Structure formats: structure tokens, C-alpha cells
Length: 85
Image 1 (cartoon, rainbow, N blue to C red):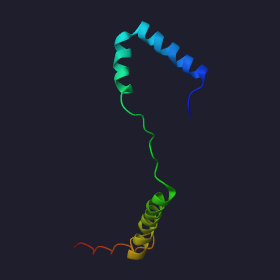
Image 2 (image 1 turned 180 degrees about the vertical axis):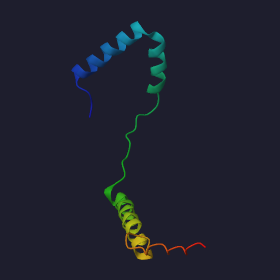
Image 3 (image 1 turned 30 degrees about the horizontal axis):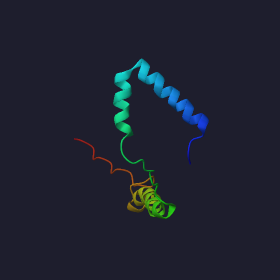
């Protein structure tokens, strides 16, 4: 989608003011404007679904494994120590 005439004019005015106020910064910023402008491609939902499922599975295992192993809330109390003497 292209810019409207009004938007182009506003950007031109900003560029002119930048060149007048800080030529060194304007020159530095111009180096970023070289080359072809490409858009970033975001991953599709199909590619994100396995990652989300893996995250859910890891969360379930983090809760379930300690309970299954007996280290959860239902763990047996420590054995009493024998009296001294």
C-alpha cells in the first residue's frame, strides 16, 4: 500500500527539517535506506501449533511427574531419628 500525497509531503518536510537541524544524523540515517525493502514474513498458525502443543505437554509433565514419582504433596514424612544415649 502506497503513501498518500499528504503523507509523502509530511515525510518530505520531516526529512528537510532533519537535514537542516542535524546533517550528520540525516546522513547516518540515509545509509539505512539503501537496498530493497522487504516485508517480514510471520510464521503461519500451522507452524506455531506444534510449538504450542509442545509447551502444553511440558507444562503438564512438570506438574504430573512429581506427583507420579511421589515427591508431590503426598510424599511420605522423613523417618524419625533414633534417640541419643
